[in-house]
Length: 473
Image (cartoon, rainbow, N blue to C red):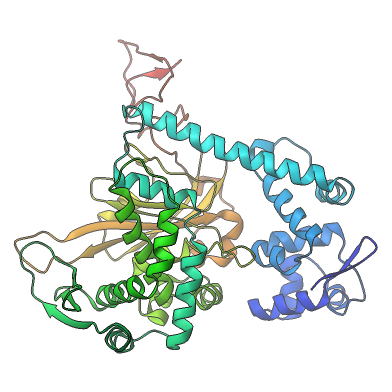
């Protein structure tokens, strides 16, 4: 634990632990932070305190680890205040490291209230964006479908459900195997719950999994790949093992449609299955060590590409957070069928997504990873990867399901995201300007615009024809 002497912060033990965890020698770490090796050695030996400027350098080089390792109240307050001021809303504010530190030390109550106010503003902006999205897309009132209510519930929870996640992690520790083999899951189902597993050919209805409670029989479609089969078995195990935890969380939800409650229970069981196959701490630490290389994570934990991407977007446990990622799945028609963002990027809930987004190209090119450096209208840049996937149908009479998944983070985390290595982050010409959707995007000069932004008048010149046949007033 970092210790303070007066207003001076000493964190030698935390610095050494951080350096060992990220696998850097003193010279490499000093170079990354911009210090001399001798200065870093003095910091690690508690011969020198960490000044505000040095603390900011570590926070910039290791944004997740540094905020966690210097875990005193003042440091946590400083981390949240720094994150708030990183919002493009304050782009013109001249607030440097010294000012932030003075605010934390001299006005801690004000700092806390400022962070709360900013957080409330962000939530209000998201709600306003939802209303704008609904109006612009012609969706009257709160006419969300039950599955949309459940989707938004997970979004509002930050896509992290603490009691379910911890219970699944405890179950994984009890089973004590990594990766968790199919035979061990089958053994747990049989000996803990009397459930037998059989495989059945496709009956023409696209059956993936069917559970007969009366007979204690789990049937899995024979066309499913090993990763999907294993996930289905894990789903059934957590549904039985964590039934109380799932029921307790679902009981606290507030939905308009009655059908949303069973959908939430299924969603929570899916969440728990992912947490069982990829236990929180082990998966997060492995992901950091592999720089979030999805293919290597799939090999290590025996999961599919989509399952690994989705799990990475859930690593938001307080005090043990992973990198904030956004994740989505898009079908051939451009519909976003899964979405979550732990970043400032938010997806359109109604209508289509930005056509410049690389995920659309990935749908048409299965099994190839594409990368993109994108910038939203607010100026925040993201590094992202997308991969097209094909799920077999098991029959010539039914077309396979084709879609793409995308995973990305803000550019400040690029060093820990292996896919950013293929991008020229310092080249302004390598940036692709994207938006949430055409109806919400304020960009005036975009050749891919499908609709004018809602609420903006347009001008049409009958004697001139550009790529977009109108201009915005």
